[in-house]
Image 1: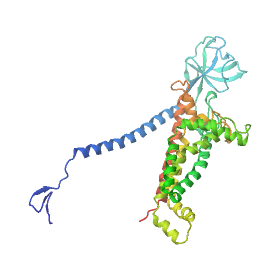
Image 2 (image 1 turned 135 degrees about the vertical axis):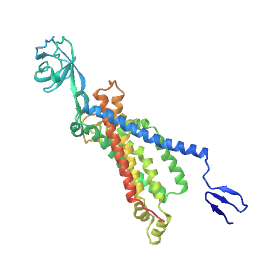
Image 3 (image 1 turned 30 degrees about the vertical axis):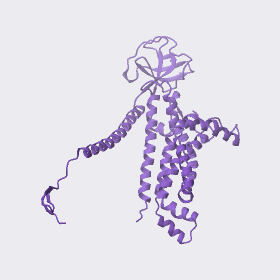
Image 4 (image 1 turned 90 degrees about the vertical axis):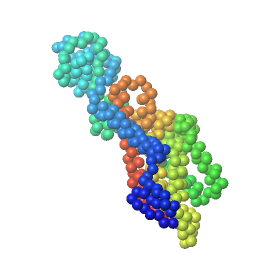
Length: 393
């Protein structure tokens, strides 16, 4: 069959002329538009999340926040007074604190005990006014980047915002989860890929999927009511506290086990059969083939599975909120209560937080740090996959 093509038209063997110009198909155009909008929406949502987190986190570091001290003036003062008598209730004032009564900003110069202070009046050009007995005293809270990233105490009620107290607990829980999930997950993946029969696979795969579908709040109570008593039975009640990061980390490891197993098994199964047959032909056993040939060949996919699982462990919320406790101390003891970043966000968000307070804005700073950590892990995952990917023909 011959066909003569002239410009944008064609002539078939019957002598009929057909145009070669692409026809407009409304259905295909609509599907393409929908797919483009879906992709654009996902990008816009991500940009919106980053914008909101960044905007509120910036307020946490730049705005001067005025927090109630629950202290009051014990006597009425005139504009000439610089010595204030204070109520004994409320949090203590310290030398150097910036305080505010109504519209006047002041600075504490000397503290005589807890109930008398020498004050510098009219700071920042604010008007020096008379103030009646019982007026509330507010204290300025400002958080620097240095304090946030180097401090080891997170106690907002005392004006301490050192993220390492929360970050260290988050890393301890994540490391515990990784130590549980990675070796077990890879072992199960190797078994399913290289050893298990179709019958065994048909039984184990649904079980793993059930584990992946259990609500995390159920895992949290499992950690509190089973894993913690089990650890206390082994190590002793005087060593393992009721709330601790060890039980939370172990159960998070169980939570991410299906993720590690599924992704690792996919990577192992994608290795060509010819590599297995070549190893067997050279006299390698099934174990030697799996460990020395298949696992190294699938390293990029396995590494990606590990990094995604780490991101999942870092971002877990309900398990740590229930089982890890709310301890704010900086500790490396996994058997003590400690609060993670996600656990702190849950606990503080469920309370009465005034909008635009320093506690409120601190949640966005923590959220932005979490987002940055998971984003960094995802970028590392992509680099690892690109660096160690094996291509076979």
